[in-house]
Image (cartoon, rainbow, N blue to C red; front, side, top):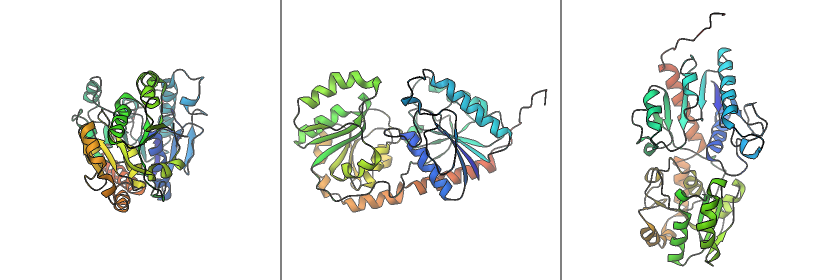
Length: 356
């Protein structure tokens, strides 16, 4: 198939450091190319791909201080995709831009789908999905669907990592871990409370976005500076994660929001590291209770299961990752969805201007 993958311009594909959506798009693109498909990736110019790169802008927007209106560049990128559809360059379009493409691309004939990567429980989402109730969408967890049952859900496809991107490394497990981003909904303050309650060191490898700087300065920084058990490492890259996660007794994920997926959970599984996570969003779909970790309700119950983490079989956790969460499995699931949609989507009338 000739497939277009249309990614956000916010981060490079793959991102240099943090960036879940762009990382998943990269892994999917690479697997589709490896499976013999002709893939064009629409992304920033500092992206890397084994397919064809179509770069509207030379640099990821998060790293480009000259760009103050990212929506403008995304609109131009969508028009470029549409023009290439007019030239019949693609058999299928796969968008990762939420609802931005829908009004334009529902009015053209090339089959397409959108994977929704974010939360969908905000009030303003309701009129969007009411208006575009026939646009095909893919969820990254069943839990993500709950707020908008009126959407045209095609299937749920869980994320996957390249099988050997992260692997268990020999290490003595001496600390609990937090990995990802420091924000109120991620519950780093609760992770500190859990580790402190257990008397176990906590290492935090996470980024702080500008939007969350006040939260970090006012709440998290004092908790770190006043607690000898807590070490703040900062943001780490993929090549550092295997060692970091393999050395952890477990990953703490005391979230307080409807997590659409939680990529960090399968990163931990790839390293054989068990997870303790709050029962929010996708968590009970991703964690196999008592096998890859524990699903808990609050800080006290989380602290209560930490002592059980050494009893879990880390080889079995890695095996479960290989069964459920590889990028190859993800790519095959998407190909099945593409083919089904290409066969079943009713031909739409192509709008032609009077000058043509």
